[in-house]
Length: 287
Ligand SMILES: Nc1ncnc2c1ncn2[C@@H]1O[C@H](COP(=O)(O)OP(=O)(O)OP(=O)(O)O)[C@@H](O)[C@H]1O
Ligand SMILES: [Mg+2]
Image (cartoon, rainbow, N blue to C red; front, side, top):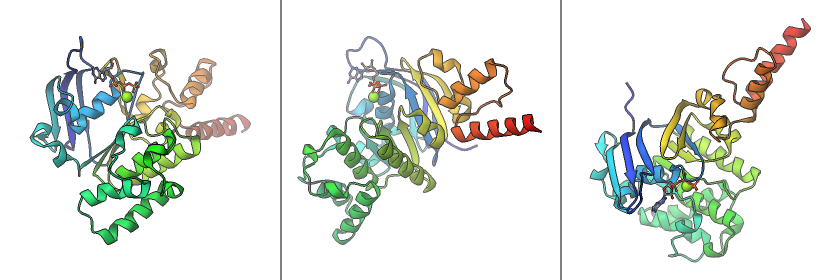
């Protein structure tokens, strides 16, 4: 049996003064080296779940947490937030909150985290440059992080966590202010991280990119995990549409074609898979 790197067992969490829990009886194992996408409507608990995994809940937010949160089979509460920092990188939903305020240009802002990790000065410059090239933000190097647009801040926030190279990336809506091309770039980098053995926990609405890149998908509704598992199982589940969860266009098309009487294979979620199925169908018809 593969042990989960992060195990949540029957986790329920209520913010201070809140009437009801924001996460309800949540159980899931996040394994090393997999890419998990978290879906759900506004206020369904996605960010709260990220904060539980990172340990900010209950340490920073207080409130009442019940159930078990384990990291490498040990209670997460046995670690301090700074002990977890080298293992868990967290890209906040609001990139403004990520800016340290300790440095006045983007290059130094990204270098700051590496300085804190004790990386040798000579190595820092090259690492920061590599990361900035990878994330396409070289042109922002001399700019003040607070004077950037939201989308630029989002890219800088992502780059500053990337520079730290943690084992686990918790990334909360990193492309919400990015255009399709820059969004694709972020997913491409995440894909490379996964190939390098990193664990990715990503909150994201861009369902076509998730269908292409993620391994497993978790769906939250009002703090409850209503559906989870391999992306082909979850994202082909047409019943999620009635629960206001965005599904890939391929899932919707496959459903419409099946209802029209066409024999479309189960669990198609990407355009490439649909293309292959349609080509096979056309071949069959023309023979
Ligand atoms: N600091 C807080 N104190 C009290 N309640 C909070 C706090 N943060 C979030 N909540 C509540 O917890 C619930 C889940 O919020 P959360 O931010 O986790 O959802 P989300 O799925 O990330 O939403 P969004 O899509 O808007 O980012 C909501 O009802 C929200 O009002
Ligand atoms: Mg959120």
